[in-house]
Amino acid sequence: MNRTLLIALSTVVVILLTGCSPNAESPAGSAAADSKPMAQPAREAAKRQMEERDAAMPEPLAEAKPQPAPPPPASPALAPQRQAVSVERAKAAGEAGRVAQFSNFVGQGRLDALRAPSEPTDREQYAHQEDNPVKRAAEQPVSTFSIDVDTGAYANVRRFLNEGRLPPQDAVRVEELINYFDYDYPLPEGRQPPFRVSTELAPTPWNPKTLLLAIGVKGYDLPKTQLPPANLVFLIDVSGSMNSPDKIGLLKPALKLLVRQLRPEDKVAIAVYAGAAGMVLEPTPGDQKAKIESALDRLSAGGSTNGGAGIQLAYNLVREGFVDGGINRVILATDGDFNVGTVNFEALKDLVETQRKSGVALTTLGFGTGNYNDQLMEQLADAGNGNYAYIDTLQEANKALVEQMSATLLTIAKDVKIQIEFNPAQVEEYRLIGYENRMLRREDFSNDAVDAGDIGAGHTVTALYEIALKDSGGALTEPLRYGQPATDATPHGDEIAFLRLRYKQPDSEVSQLLEWPIQRDQMIGSWREASERFRFAAAVAGFGQKLRGGRYTGSFSYDKVLALARDARGADPFGYRSEFLTLVGLTRSLDPGQSGRQAQMLR
Image 1: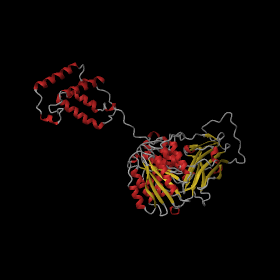
Image 2: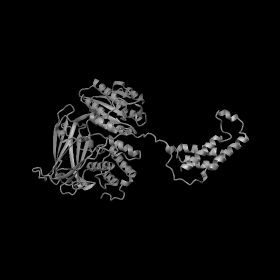
Image 3: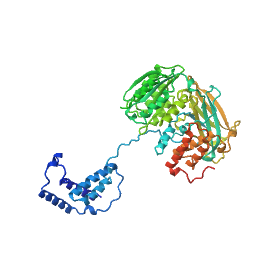
Image 4: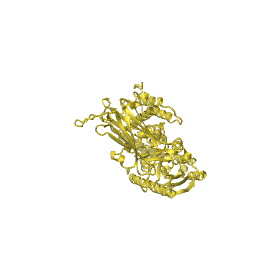
């Protein structure tokens, strides 16, 4: 191969030295077109020089043995042009055979393959989380976590699938997939407490030896017309990384959807940041929609990204117009690619945590691909007592900012924590599905200084535990040899678990406690007899776990996910559940090794 390349390059050198063609331009440029043809003695001398060089070559190129196929060319669009130029020069020099070999070498892109690879364009960032482990009730009977109302992971996963690729496992937060959907839980009878808790217990669709315990929380709803006055600041990233149709191009019409819902008593200001931060619209009443939309239309992207300065400015603007008893919120719209100023992840979280103490909440809206920082967007919203949504389409913006406007803007309960204690006399093992980055220590449950998630008006939160009862054959771990044997929990022997929930009123720093026992007689004999909401939530949970590798779902295939979800689709006024069915079918095609087409379907 090296010998062939050396001979080919020598041929090109000869061609260049001999002028390549009678019509070739001289070094003087186009003036050479008027020069006389090469004299006959000069042409003969050049020919003799070529023959002497050829005689010195031990093996002609034309007789070179075929080489293995090379890697695909790095720049295939250049190959035909190079090939045409090389062949033309070869014909002029009478060396068509030799240069055909050289042209083949270049045309196959072997030289291009030697070039250094270009800088990767996909720099998206996701926090790594291991799946929650299985725990034995006799050893660790208590599980504590913060609720989560974010839905950004679902829309982001949808974006990956619609691009024709599977999402990274760390992009899949199963609880956010489950909580993307409304499950029609019963509403609370009043506003004290501000939500109602429902539980359901039935066999697990992917493991007949275990049970799923579903915990559903539904906040009281409030029509948009009854919302308190809103004091909003749109904090918009206009740095160079936002200059694309799926970023600044989608951001403008998305925020206009929210603007069109505002009332005269509401007000909105617009702050932007790139290398520096500034205000582009002073606080403006909600009925001056043309003025607000015009300010959005004038935005353009360019420069570096000083997100920390922008966050500080936005909070200052909200505090200046603070409305007692109203909605005071920063809405941050960005790809999360902060690269100047305060860029340290923990420093940005500390900044937001400090600001939330002033009573100002933070909603984060994520946009774009390639450099998207999902970890930052999700964690900033958590630190800011807010919520996180990923906007991949205008329809998603409509869902988050119009259909769920009350839930997005109005907090009805804050620092909501769930703790469940499993009865070792009844339960062998358990594991919480999702909420990996929301886990709390046992003592955090009663510590009002520990922050937790908030619930908005009309919000739905669902949590699923997979549990193995005693002697069910579903346990995955062995009991400790020297552990104390479980004793009957008399007088609570029929209880599988005990559920506790703590929350604070939005204007209070003292939590309130709610408690419910979960009885064994609540168990439904077959998952087919469970409610539609239970079955659909189980389908979404199975789908999310499979996207994360399916460590605990066994042979539960995408076909089975699809069948379970289709049977439990129920009322679907906005088409979100139907879209889920489409995504499962698409995933089955993208991941044929996991499709389970040959697996036994649900019976």
